[in-house]
Amino acid sequence: MRLPIFDLHNDLLSFLSEQENRSFLSPLSRCSYLQMKQGGVETQVLAIFTNKSPNSIGLAQKQSEKLQWLYEHPSYFSPISQKAQPTAISTIAAFEGASGFADEDEPLTMSLQRLAHYQSKIGPLFYIGITWNEENRFGGGADTSIGLKPDGIHLLEWLDNRKIAIDLSHASDALAYDILTKIDQNNWQIPLIASHCNFRKVHFATRNLPDELVHEIIHRKGLLGLNFFAPFVHKEDPNGLIQHIEYALTLNAKEALCFGADFFCDSDASNLQAKYPGQSFYHAPYDTAECYPILLERLALKLELPILQSIAYENARTFLHTQILGMTTSGT
Image (cartoon, rainbow, N blue to C red; front, top):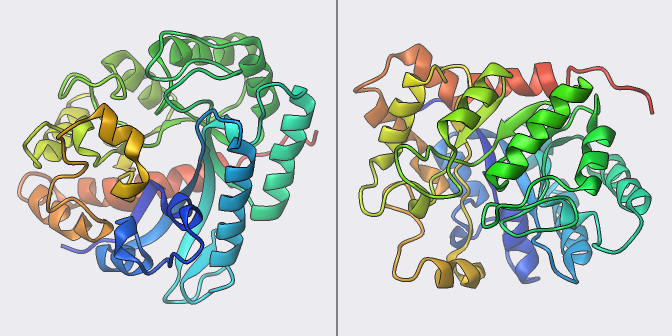
């Protein structure tokens, strides 16, 4: 079954940055241009991934340059702000980890200036995840119990009415709840998503969402991007993906659920190989961006077409145009 796909997260930019001779046509990425086209992907959020490290700024810069390089091939990739050629995939960038624009020790004003500079160079940003799985100057990641730090509060204040969502995917529970509290206390206008997460009640992983956070994202008209990374789906059963979708729908996530498959190259993730020894990163047949028609075909046995359309593209597209591209800015 083929439907247009709007996916919230892959690591193509990180793949291209790891080695200079890599191609956006390489199937090793699991999310090459050809794999995405075969899967029906029409709109893709490209993550600029960094964890906290001494070279995070440089890694993010390299990935932003790769994004600009992709745009030099307009029959393959197009920025979301421009009318795409018929064969092109529309793309928009996002930061998976604020360490990509913020060194741990520099003044925060310098970090925010760098972030604004990225916007001027590569166009609008769909979302920012404050950290990866570890702790940084802004707050604690999924492998910690640390909440929001003072610099994290200042970052949220800067984001108020800036047309960039906050991504809770890699947040600790404490960080996620602190973010919600600060947004509410200050009436900040910041869209909220979990771009590539699943559901803790279906499969326990600290990177999966507890029901309370799922309800908060739904209540705030955010997005829940389904993650295809096997350790977050099910230890053995590839159709655990379907279980996550069915469970989300019992939580009234019909207008929030979408795809955030999180495809990346296995050989680039030695840290995850150590963290999940002996586990496959993806279950076949949901192991490359070609898989969406297969998943939709199986979902069609259980769900009606309007729900499939919402998950495949309508929810993410509506969010993009109403909460990101369509919001008004503060002018500061």
